[in-house]
Length: 452
Image 1 (cartoon, one colour):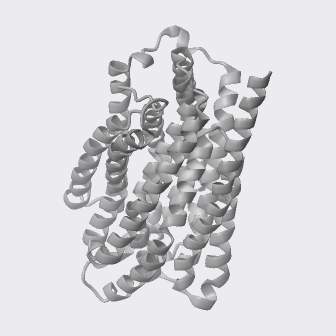
Image 2: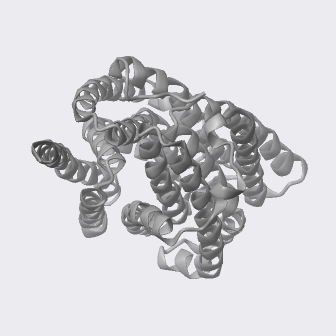
Image 3: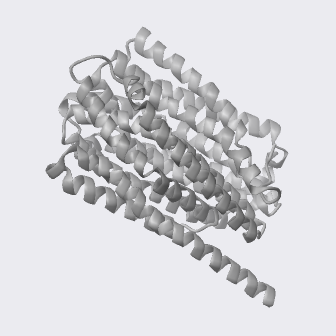
């Protein structure tokens, strides 16, 4: 069931890996998209804006958790590449311990700080209750999100991108059914949408755990594998924490951007909500390629195959450019039908549509820099380097803040449209050169060892 990426044609391996992963990521986006569509169509524009206003906070907290669990998977991928099953099993057990601890701490802090955070981001009063009711349930169910991301990251570290796909499909359909039941039948509003998401994520996590135990020989855990080792915990945290903080730094920029959006009123918030949902769906190919880059470089670093890392990155860059052009073309052609999925007929529809179209035009124009940022940052992380990805995240933060917060009063919604493109371009200018520096450093170390 595993996929050894240290041998074979890199292009075929990457394509084989990313296709099911891409489908899975798209289904994962259905969690938030279905919530947004049903809330927008059946609860109203204010409820839609309420859910959308939590996007940056959601990313800040859940992104931290996702970064942490993704970091835990790096030593697992390296252990697999080094053909060390005992090391793989030990790090899987340690990842479980740390995930539980982090989930408890994050849940306590985030639920207590939710209301002040909503106030800090200038959530309008008319949508504050919607935003709070949605997010408090999402945060109380934080462990289900972390459990799924941890188990899915472990499977992907071993080269299995298909299994998380199957369970995401099941969870996505369950989410749709529960959305309709909770919102239309039980009249639970945004709370019903949040509860459906938590239950669906918990289901996919349980399915992953059961499958790992039954099907993966390398993950047949014994009592000896579950010992606690502080050195191992430190190693996992040394990779997981910087990746988590990297997501948080990016999210801080998103929170400040959301605050700028909120200052423009409910129409702007509703527009930005639709923008984010469409954008997140459109960029899934890049996120998928980034996950493939982490797994590919992690396994090949463990095997000492730097030549394969360079060859694979060239191929993935070409694949990424093609995907960026295709995604841009789709958004340019089909933006109106996509927008209409989220908003119902009414006086606000034209204003929301115009705002979303303007945002998407600018976003599409910078999809190639975004792809380079995601791919090269993820690949550097797969090689165990957390410094340059963090620097890139800080550059992203500065880009969003300077453009959105600095110019929103002067040029209004256009500043919101320009903020992310500026952040993507700045981040890409950091990680692409950093990748070549990292490869050169690793090769020099290897040559030094051989000479000794």
